[in-house]
Image 1 (cartoon, rainbow, N blue to C red):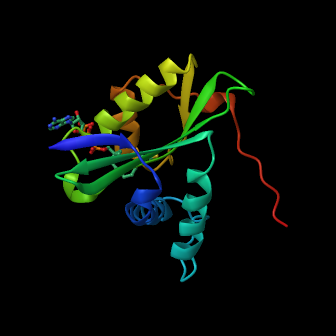
Image 2 (image 1 turned 90 degrees about the vertical axis):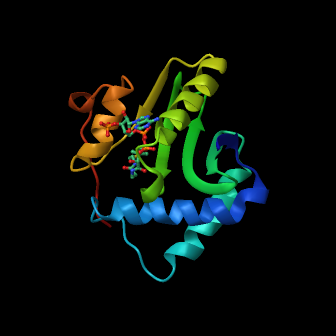
Length: 153
Ligand SMILES: CC(C)(COP(=O)(O)OP(=O)(O)OC[C@H]1O[C@@H](n2cnc3c(N)ncnc32)[C@H](O)[C@@H]1OP(=O)(O)O)[C@@H](O)C(=O)NCCC(=O)NCCS
């Protein structure tokens, strides 16, 4: 049975594992996402910190009590009416079973309840599979509205 729940500190180990796998997956598409021997430790610190932050919501998907998917939502109502989906990841062998869709539906429910009007997510240009997934869930590209600027220091 699949369950989707709001994660807590009790789920820390599973969250760190899934966050690391998501990060590893992103590194396939983005040269700036680097994996080294500190990554796991750094991500663990980040997850612990974010779990304390009331603006950040971690959702955990489990199958028969085994954690297999994660979604991380940031909500800053004071700034605008937009929620930001920072991470969405389902373990490979559990994909295409509707779990990603269930996570998005729960996210929509939470964001709606908060009275916000928009959910935003960024996807790597090369991640065509995820783009198709989001387009089926009625997310539309807005890429022409933004360009990414950076300055190397
Ligand atoms: C993107 C991602 C989260 C989708 O998760 P998922 O659990 O596979 O998603 P779903 O199963 O809900 O949907 C995927 C496909 O299964 C189909 N599907 C949905 N419910 C289904 C069900 N009950 N049974 C069978 N197939 C189903 C969907 O129509 C969809 O079809 P498509 O491949 O033609 O688009 C997952 O592929 C993933 O973790 N990818 C790596 C990380 C990533 O790219 N994240 C997004 C960038 S932030």
